[in-house]
Amino acid sequence: MRRATGRWRRSIHVRVVSSTLVVSAIVVAFLGFVVLQQVKAGLLQAKLKSSISEEALGVSNARRLLANDSGATDVQAVLQQLVQSLSPVQGGRDGGYEVVGYELVTGTASRTEPALNNGLDKASVPAKLVDFVNTGNSQYYYTYGTMSYTDGAHWPELVIGSSLQLPDSSFSTYQFYYLFSLQQQQQTLSLVWRTLLLSGIALVVLLAGIAWLVTRQVVRPVRMAARIAERLADGRLQERMTPKGEDDLARLAASFNKMAESLQRQIRRLEELSRIQRRFVSDVSHELRTPLTTVRMAADVLYEARTDFEPASARSAELLQTQLDRFEILLGDLLEISRHDAGAASLEADAIDVRDLVRHVVEATEPLAARRGSTVTLHMPDGPCICEADSRRVERILRNLLVNAAEHGEGGPIDVHVVADDDVVAIAVRDHGIGLRPGESSLVFNRFWRADPARARTTGGTGLGLSIASEDARLHGGRLQAWGERGKGSQFLLTLPRRAGAVVMRSPIPVAPVDNADEAAEQPTPESVAPAPVAVADPGSIATLRGRRD
Image 1 (tube, one colour):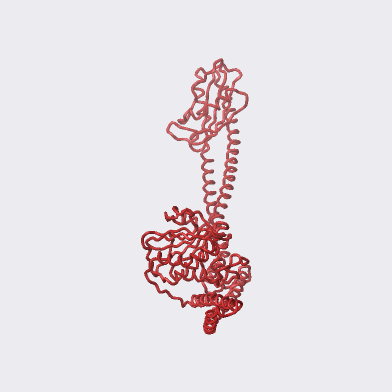
Image 2 (tube, rainbow, N blue to C red):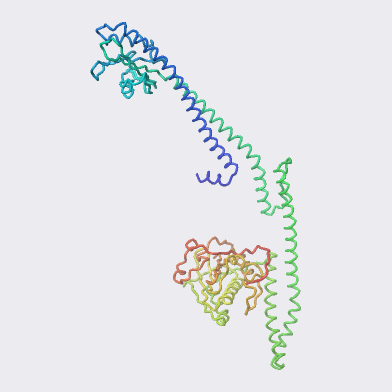
C-alpha cells in the first residue's frame, strides 16, 4: 500500500490514468444502472399490458362457462375444471401463466379451497392481493410476487386478480387470479445486464488505455526534462533534450536547452571567477609574506624602543604593532582558506584527549571573557574522551567558537559541554547573548558575513573564522552546526568521529540547547528536542557575502 501511495504521489502518469479509470467507471456504472432500470420498466410495462388483456379474456370465458354450469351441485369440481380449461398446457413453467380460482360463499367471509393446476403452490397468490380483490371496488388488481411449485421450482411472477359474480347464482362471488411468469423477462434483463457489464468494462479499459497513451505523450518529455535536470544538477552540463516536431512540447525542449546553455555559461563564468579569486587570494597572501616580515622586523624594533620616543610616537608604535598582529591573523586565515579551496589541506591526526584541549582553550580565552563580563563553565565527563584528530585544527575551531561567544555573549554566562559515546565526541559552546535572527543560522558559516555590520567590535576578526572552522570540521569527517534565537543566545555544536576516516552520522548533544545543566548531562538525543532554527556548515559554497561574524 505504501509503494502504491508513493507511486501515486510521484507519477503524474499514474494519477491521470487512475483518475480516468475511476471517473469513467463511475460514469459507466451510473449510465448502466439508468439503462437497466429503463429496460426493466419497459419489459414490465409491456408484460403488464399483455397480461391484462389475457386476464380480461379469461374472466369473460369464465363468466360464460359458469353461466352454463350454474345448476351444478358440485361447484368446487366445476371450478377446478374451469381452472384447467383456462390454464395453458405447460402453465407457467414455459414462461406462460397459471390460473387459480376461489369460491366465496354468500353471507360468509370464508372461501373454499383454491382450484389449482400443474402442481402450483397456493402460497403463490400474495395475501395482500387477496385482500384487495375482496374489496371488489375495482375491475382488477395486480402485484408482483414469486411463482412457486410443490416440486421447488420458482421464479418471479405478475399476479392479476379479479372477482366475478353471476346475477342468478346462489353463490356469492368467484375470484380468479392469473399468475404470469416473468422468467423470460428475467432472462432478458440478465442478458442486458451482462451485456452492459461487459461493454462497460471494455469501455473503461479502453478509456484508461487512451488516457495512458495520451498522458504518456505529455509525460515522457517532462520525465526526460526531469532526468536531464538531475544530470545538470550533478554537474553534467553538456546534457540536452532532443526537440521533436513543432508543438508545445518541442518548444518546451528548445527553451529548456536554451536555459541549460545559459546556466552552463554562467556556471563556467562563475567557476572561472572563483578560480581566479582563489588564485589571486593565494598569490597575494604568499606575496605579502615577504614585505610583512620586513615590516614586522622594523615594527618590533620600534616597539621595543618606544620608551625613548615622544608620547605620540610611542603610541604610534603600539598601534603599528597591534595592526600588524591583526594583519598577520588575516593573512594566515587567507592562506588557510586558500589551502582548503585548493584541496591541499591535510590532517595530522593523533590520539588526543579532547578534555585537555578544551581546558587549554578555555584558559586562553578566559581573560577575554572576563573583560566582557562573562564566565565560562565547563561540563565534561570524568573519564577521558579520546579522539583521533588534528589538535591544531580542533584547537583553532574551539578558540574561534569561544572568542565568538565572548564577543557576542553580552556579558552572559558561557557553557561548554563535552559529551562522548562509542562513535563520536561532541563539544557545544553556548552563550546567552543577543542570539541570531530567523534565517541567520544558515549564514554564519559564509565568508565575511556579519550579523550586524553596524555593531562596534572590540576584538577585531577576519570574517573567515567560522568558515575555516567548518572546513576543518569537514576535513575530520565531522560537522559544525549552529543554532540561535533572538534574545536567547546561540549555540555552536562541533561533532567529531572518534576514529580517523569515519563519518559523523549523529550527535549525542542536540543542536538546540537544553539550558538546565542537569538535563544536558543526561545526553538527550536530537529527536527528543523541539525543532529550532539549525544550520549545518556548507564549506563547499563559493558565495561571498558582505558583512561578517567571526
